[in-house]
Image (cartoon, rainbow, N blue to C red; front, side, top):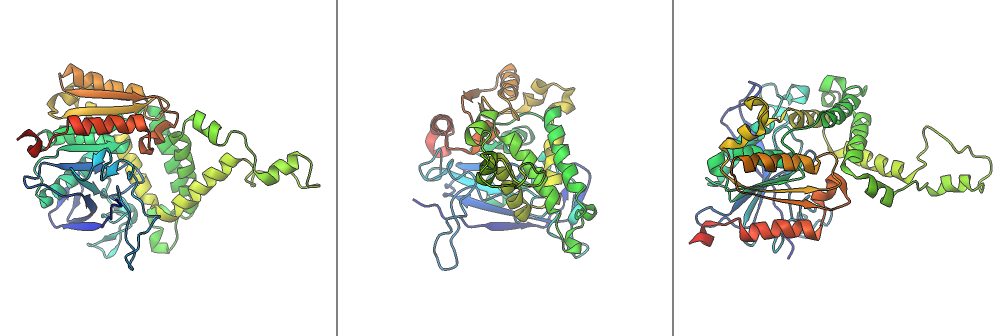
Length: 393
């Protein structure tokens, strides 16, 4: 059964006081829902997205003529849908695009109503906590007082954790996949190098590039290339690309093409170079540079233990949800040790927690892929642990 997705928006007129102290007089949230909300609104599952994803979690869009757009598949479609691990025949699933992003919610690429101009670099700094607060507003508008579960991978997992801390009475289960309680210095360093690539692009223009009808594409390309290197494991990169040369370069090495000069700082010679440049070029055409800066900063800032003297156990003491955590052995950006750190803190607080460490070769990107063992864990958890009101009657 093909799940048909329909994008929706919620215009919020109430002001939002952000963690930075800035106030948004109002804002728009883009979101999608899948499945049906049951009579007592007890079967809602909120899916939180990572850096470059959106509210389009699952399904495909329909074209104007009613045909299906096969290229519009949601970013977690292998996880969410009829009969899938998060079964939309049973659960009402909500995907929301965070403010500061560039896929329909208020952000740097939208118009500031106070000035009539695109926000650009003037959009306020956002945090994970701000996102959770706006998601709670959306749930209120949908008539949902408590979530059966909140889940996400990577940065989405940080939001799921923050939900359990900010609104402990509104979350029954929190599912964190390939996530962490904060970023390591190495992770922050990768984010900073990517940000510097963007802000030093001559077309960045102090973040007001749209006012000058240009885009910092070069910086975005490099930022994406850096990101992709960290999302993949060394094993996957070697298996997929190795030291394979592109056909023309290989011919030169074999001495079959006359006098063309082999080595170049400009030519794409290795297959891994071709892959990275393709990903960078594609990203630069659809993602907003200011959004990249904002969301990577939100990643850097998240650290619930900071307000508790650095004690993660103390930070998690107020949680009431039951937890499932999943990590992947070759994920060096959000390593299994970071998930185990959260598991230990939850156990110290005598919270109910399940943990699965999947031996998968794909690196951080594994949370997006269709791995039978990983999906089996999530499916079993939702079938056996995540109850709706109808299940307990």
